[in-house]
Amino acid sequence: MAFLLSAWRAIGKMALGRPQPGGRQRKPTEPSPTERAATVRLAESKIKEAILHPDPPIRQRAIRYFSESFSTDASIMPLVIRSVETYGRDPSDLLIFWSRKLPQTKETIDWIVGELRDEQIEQTKDYARSLREVLATADASLLSPMASSLFDTGLPPEINTKISERLEMLSWDEARCWQELEKLCEEGKDASTMQQFNLNRSRQIVEALARFGNACEEKVLSLLQVQTASLVSDPMIWMEPMAVELAGRLRLESAVPLLIAKLRGDIDDMLNEGCAESLSRIGTPAVLEAIAAAWTEAPDHFRLYGSTPLGCVHTDLAVEKCLQLLPGVNDDYIRPKLAQCLLAHFDPEGIEIARQMLLHEELGFMESELRIDLIESCIIMDEQFPELDAWRAAEEAQKAAHQKWVAELEGDPAELLRFAIEKLSGKKRPKAPPAKPAVLPPASPPAASRLGSVQKVGRNSLCPCGSGKKYKVCCLRKQRG
Image 1: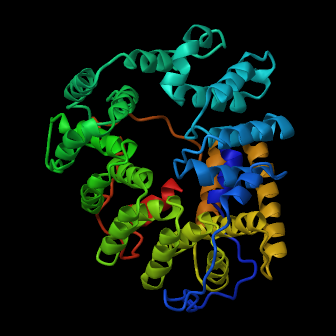
Image 2: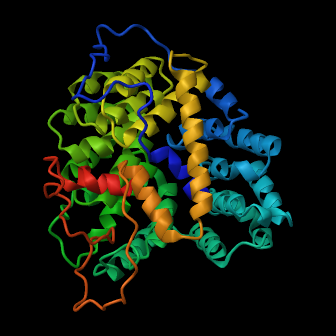
Image 3: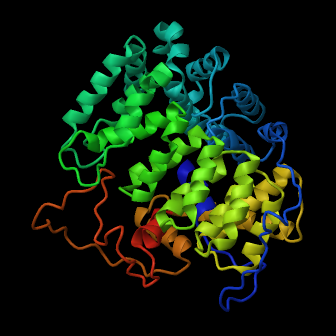
C-alpha cells in the first residue's frame, strides 16, 4: 500500500494553468551562461531544516537530496531520528526508506535496534521493514561489536543471513574477496537473469572490496576495459557490472572515461543504471565535464541515464552544465528531467524554467512529476510564483482522489492495474473481458537479458507507436513509469 500511495508522484496528467495544446510553444526561458545572473543554491543547512518540516513529502524530498548524492554527512541520520520522534512512525516509513544510503553511527544503530525491539513496531509494518533494511546495509564495522545482540531483534531470516555474511567478509583479505567474486561470476556465467545469478552476495563482496581503497584501482580499470557486448557464457557478463559498482564505491576518477564509454555503448539497462550511479558516487568535476562533452552527439539513452549525475552531484558546476545543455534538448522527457535536476539542486533559476515548461510545453506523464518537484522545491526554498497556490491545491486534490481510488480498488488487482494504466496514459481503457481458461505456451520462452525482461519489440528498435524514437526511450520507459 505504501508503494501505491507514493506512486501518484510519477503518474497522471493535469491541464491546470496551461494553454490549449496547439503544437509545441516553448519559450526561450533558458539563459545562456553569459546571460545567467549570479544565483546561489540553497544552503544545505536550510535543506537539513526541511527534514523536520511538518509535511511528510517535504521531509522526504529533503532527505533524498542527501541520500541520492551519497552524502557522507553523519549529521543527517540524527535529524531523521528527530523527525520520527516528532511526527511518529506511521508517516515516517518513506523517510526511513530513503535513509538506507546515509552514513550511520554507533548511536544511530543503537536507536534502530531499540526501535526494532519495541513490541509495538509491527503495528507499522512498512516502517519496520525500512528500519531492517537500514540496519542490514549499515557499515559492517559498526555492526560487528554488537553482533551478538543484533539477532535478538526479531529480524527476518533473510536479513539475519545478509548481516551474517557481511560480518564474515570483514575477515577476508583482498585476495579472498576477488577469489570469491570470480567464483560467483564463473558459476553464474550461463545465468540469463538476475534471479539466476547471486547478485546480492556479489554486491556484498564488492562492498567488502571497497575497504581496500586504491589497492583495487588497477584491477578495476583492467576489468572495465574488457568489451562484453558479444560475450556468451563468460564470467565477465556479471563481473562487468560488479567492476562498475566497485569503481563508484572507490570513487575512482580514473574510471570516468571508461564509465562514459560503457554508458554510450548501451549494453543493457542494468549496466546503464550502474554507470549512472557510479558516476554520481564519484561526483567530481571530471564527471560533469565528461557528461557535458559527450552530450551533444550522444544517443537518447545516454542523455536519459547521464541526467542522473547532473541532478545528484550538488555543485555549482552541475547547475551550470544543466543550463548549458537545456537549450539544445527537444526530447519531451529529457527536458523536464534537466529541469528536475535544477530543482534537485535547489537553484532559484530552476523555478522559472520549470514553471515555463509546465505552462507552455507538452510534457506528457512527466508533467505531474515536474509540478510536484517545483512545488516542493519552492516550499523548501521559501519561494513563490503566481500559480503556486492553485497548483498545490490541484496536486493535493489529485493525491486525495488517487488514495481514495486505491483504497476502493485494493481488493481488485485487475481494476487497480487498469486504473494505474489510465493514470499513466491519460486514456480510459475498457474493462477486461472475463478470463478464458489458461492455455500453456507451445514452447519455452526465449532467453532473457541479465535484466530478466522478455520483450516482443527490441529495445533498440523503432517504437511501434510511430514516434520515431527507439522503443527503450519511448513507450518502454513510459511502461516502467
